[in-house]
Image (cartoon, rainbow, N blue to C red; front, side, top):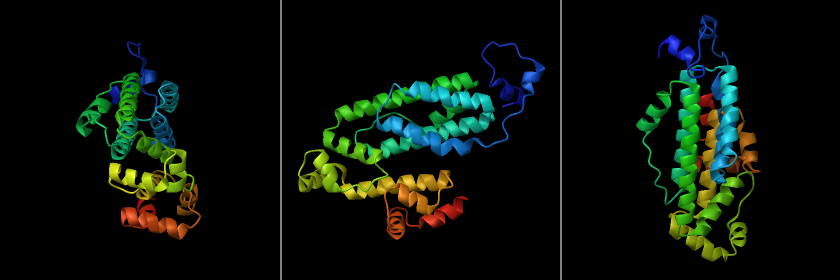
Length: 247
């Protein structure tokens, strides 16, 4: 993109441009400081399959983007990462998910946006389609109990979660629920809980300045050494190694 095209990115369609508008500087602050907050908010909308709050949330973020005027290339990279991260999470936790996507097509869609209006409209449309696919997937699932159990885990990451507690919520015998979960997903329920919590821990280590202690506590672990052991069992490295590699 040429400089003029970069500057025109923030102008409304068919607007008359002054030289002053084309010379307005872009933000000096980094956009990725907002990543963890926006990523967590989007994740909650997906987990709850919440169509209604979606448009206001996206509109609110784009108000911030317009106000601060982040560089178009940085903004597009930010949006692409948000979309890819959430898509991969949904895909890894779903058994019946068939939403079409290729990284190349996504990259092309985001980076071909000529204005912030185009980018906002594309993101709103993409997210609506993704939510519709998730909703359809939930309805088609052969085992609604599995979907409910996973949704409970994803919305209670700050708590200690036991198999017995979730079985009771589903009105199932714990031993039966344990066998059912393993049969349907090829992993034990407790393995799933640990994996999802550790994936969230890794995300926070990479995108925030939270300490290992803070993350451990926020994910329902009283014992930091046990948290470290769980993290190492999933990623084959200690959380402190990952943190030091990022900051």
